[in-house]
Length: 289
Ligand code: ADP
Ligand code: NA
Image: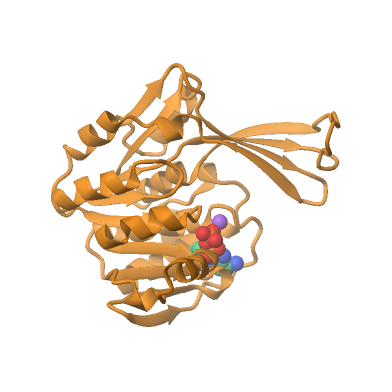
C-alpha cells in the first residue's frame, strides 16, 4: 500500500531579531537558519518516518533541489516532485523576536503551480486502496479528489490552513477529514453542520494537549493526549496526520492508529523544529510518557 500526498514544500527561513520590525524600519537579524517546511512536506516526512511508502506530489522552483534531496533522505518518494525553473519554491519568512513572538510572510510560489500532468501521472501509478492525502497549501484539490475517487483511492484531507470553499467542495469525496479545534469550529460555522453531520465516514479533530476526538459514522469518541511538557508545538498536527494515515495504510484498526499518532504528536511537541525533527517509528515506540 502507499500514500500519495498532494502538498506544499516550503523553505522556512527563520530570522532571529531583537524585536519585530515596524513600517520603514531596517533591522539586523542576530541569526538565520533554513529548514524544510510546508504542511505537505511535513506530512510526507511524518508518513515516511512512520514506515509508509509515501510519494509526495508537488513542485519546487529551481531553488528547491536541496528540499527534494532532504525529503529523499527522510525516506519520501520524490519522483513526482516537479522542478519549475521560472518560479521560486514556496517560502515562509519567519521573524522571531527575543520574547518568542513571531510574524510570518508566506509565498506560495511553485506550490500553486503544480502541473496537472504531475498529479495525473503520479495517480496513474496508484492502486485501489492506496491513500490520497491533501491539504490547503496547493490548488487542484477538488479535481484531484475526483480523479482519486474514480481510481478507488482512500481520500484524506487535512483542512489546513482552513478554506471553507475548498473543504466544502471536497466533502462529498472524502473518506477521512482531519481538523484541529479551530478549523472544526470554522467548518461548523461555514456549513452549519456539526462534524457528526458532515457525512464523512471518519473525522478526527485534534485538540492539542487535550488529545483527539474521533467521529466514526456520526458517533464521537475522545482520546486523551500523552502527558508531556511542550517545547515547540509547530508540526504536531502534521506529524499526527502523517502517522495516523501511515498506520491505517498498514492495516491497523483506527483506535491503534490514533494511539500511535498521539504518541508521535506528543513527542514532536518536545522537540524544537519542524520537518527536520519529526520522530521516526522507533523513537515513537520507545518513548516513555
Ligand atoms: P495542530 O498543530 O494542527 O494545531 P494539535 O495542536 O491539535 O494540532 O496537535 C495534534 C496532536 O498532537 C494532538 O491531537 C495531540 O495528540 C498531540 N499534541 C499536541 N500538543 C500536545 C501537548 N501539549 N501534549 C501532548 N500531546 C500534544
Ligand atoms: Na502545529
